[in-house]
Length: 351
Image (cartoon, rainbow, N blue to C red; front, side, top):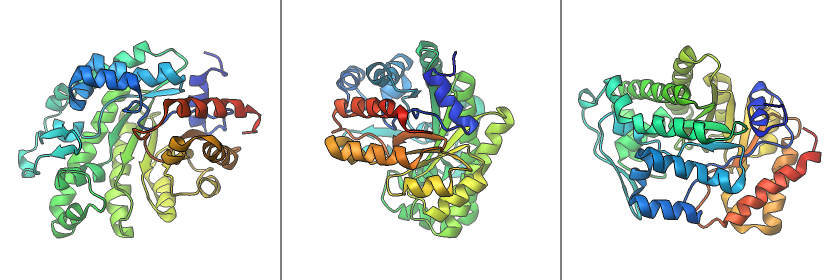
């Protein structure tokens, strides 16, 4: 592989090199906005069936790579495979989204790692298949939910804006909640390790509900568990490339997250200034982000300006172009193609 190939560009960023043009992939790049995804979803019958059937997960993972020539594929799966592995019921209801059965007593969770591996073997098989099918100039990304976000789903039973039930549970039952986080730290780490063994080049930790927490809670529920996960993963894979995404964290929270968790990179959400991130974080971590998904839907001059602003903010910064959150269903596929083309045409911007 030569230095100019896309995979070399993508992975060179993890050597803290500014790469030009910036490598690009998008969160939820495989999804409902693609007609080929819709066809596969109809064939599968359910979202969960697609996640847990290796040939279907492989197909959906590869669809955006074929269409847009992105620099990395991210495994089509879901963060809730870990509660599933632990024995908590998970289902996906049309029009509602994920629904998780009530949290059982912790003693009733399945803590047998062999059982985890068996339940999640379809996920690892799908990742290995994708890695085998990808051209050598593409990177493979695995992922997991962060312990706090998974705990919130397991307690709430679904996604909410403020995670009130999870926060009340944590405040009222601190010892029990700490035990749940410990279980999840180990499960998340083992899930990421298994994905690295299956061929992932990079793994990302999604802390979707990190925003809005008080300072002490952010330190105890987001930073400390993520540090635990990173440490355990690096004990197995010392050179593992890890990106964290503490969505909607404050600027102070992001600075502490980068300084204290040990992640290589941090994904920046739409609400955080990329110019600030490049100045405050760019010497300590690889940056990823942070195009507004609604700008991607809008297209035209709005989209071009948003892309250019991000590229100019990250000049001379190790950087991966992405969204500030996931691609939404109403996104025109041609707008994604336009973003990729514009990024690659911006090679004249010095990095």
